[in-house]
Image 1: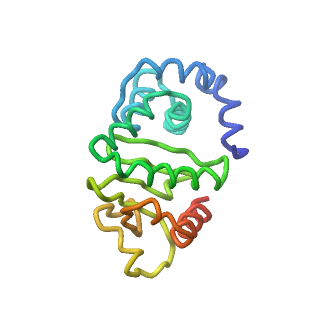
Image 2: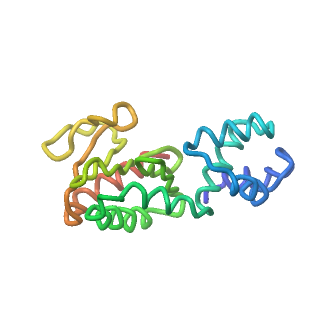
Length: 180
């Protein structure tokens, strides 16, 4: 965990009136389909500033079970793709302790200080892996962002766990390195 985040968590009781654990407990019983809905709730109902609200919601996802359900839902009817997802996550977790997995309804954002990879089961036979890369030329495999638009700069289509190869891991690591 980086120093700024540790400081923010340490200052949370003084600045927001509650500790991170207390905020997580409040959010535990709520059901928000989007990250932004939970942030809006904390800001409007508890007068938490945007920075603290965003941090609380992001960190609460690390400690709550509904995330597993969101990922499971993404792969219903697409179970053959789940080993690809697992192999991606296994590698991504080796990058550092500052990586946050943020499952949404249709995808999983991989965040350091900001999103650097997006995993989306696009069809029953394909995962689209979006990247934020700088000055990287488009290739046959490393395509333009396609359906991701401005959320990503590049996309790779994955059809098999073997597609999570050395080249792909190099791009993931590069996206991680520039996401500070």
